[in-house]
Length: 189
Image (tube, rainbow, N blue to C red; front, side, top):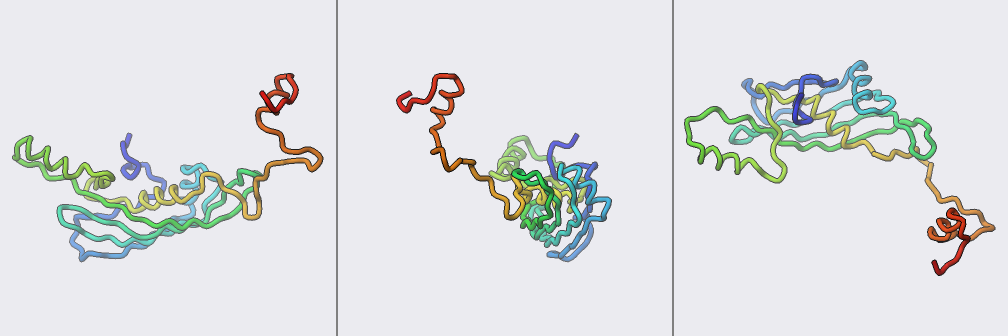
């Protein structure tokens, strides 16, 4: 089982990019999900439906085996409103910026030199690993799409309002609890 979300073979939307091939950097890559991949992505993200996913990436090669992927993920998704429970369509636009790092080649250096190199890599937000010389741009798009999903989606125009009857003033939470326990309502409790 993969230990990191951007590493894995069972991706519902996979577009491997070979970093070891001879290319001139930076370069631009556009990807789009097929209808079958949209269905699998919706299931993986536990949302009702996804009708389109497109991503535009700029891939830059940096010194020391680093690659910077920037760009944007756009999707049209169907969500369930947390207030009304109605389904509604919404657009997701999420910026992308992620750094990848190739694993260092085996070396004959001693443990102290390797430990220093590991310390240099152990940053606050460490780079994603490049697996088998590839970056899965589909997995990057899926992860940033997931980040762009509102955890509490509300249908436009729907609001969650506290229900207060005009004849009755809003009671304090403690008075309501007191009534539930059968003690009546006193403000000094």
